[in-house]
Image (cartoon, rainbow, N blue to C red):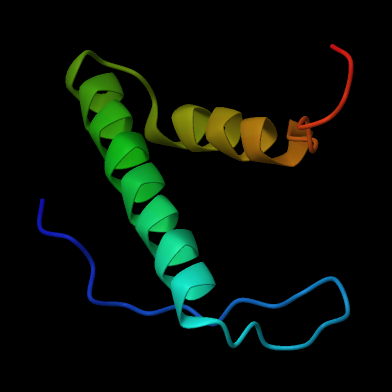
Length: 74
């Protein structure tokens, strides 16, 4: 799967556009990596018989459950 040429606009907690080129590059590269990983997992799931809607719901639930973890005692 080719890397996306899509350059997303990212916002700070203050709802301002993040203008740092390097920050945007890192965020967009991370987004592309996640997209590829999730697409591959989705394709595998469908190929082995998983219901598409069920898989997508589980991925959405996973995303919704994410919390910032750096600097926290786990």
